[in-house]
Length: 96
Image 1 (tube, rainbow, N blue to C red):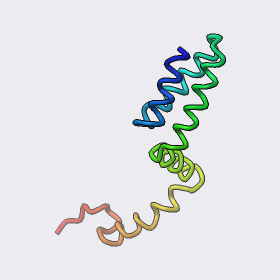
Image 2: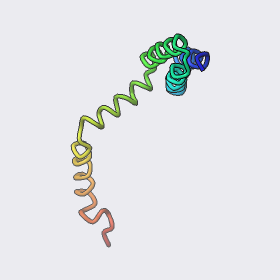
Image 3: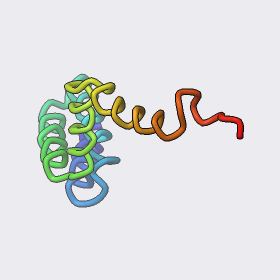
Image 4: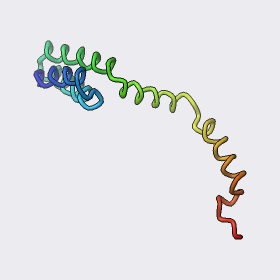
C-alpha cells in the first residue's frame, strides 16, 4: 500500500492531480495503519505537494469555502429579483 501511496502522490504532482491526490492520500493513510510508516509519510508529503500544485483542487476547496462562508441567498436574491421583474411573480406562466 505504501508503494501505491508514493506512486499516486507522484502522479498527482505530474499528471491529473484532482484524481491522483485523493487516491494518494487514501493509500497513505491505509499504509500508516498497516505499519508502513515511512511509505505512508512520504505518500502524505507527496499528496500535499500534489494538492499545492493542482489549480483544480484549489478551485474546489475555494468554492467550498465560499459556499460555507457566504449565504447563498446573498448571491441568488438579486438574480431572482431580476427574473421576477421580467416574468412576474408567477414564474413566467403568464397567459397572453
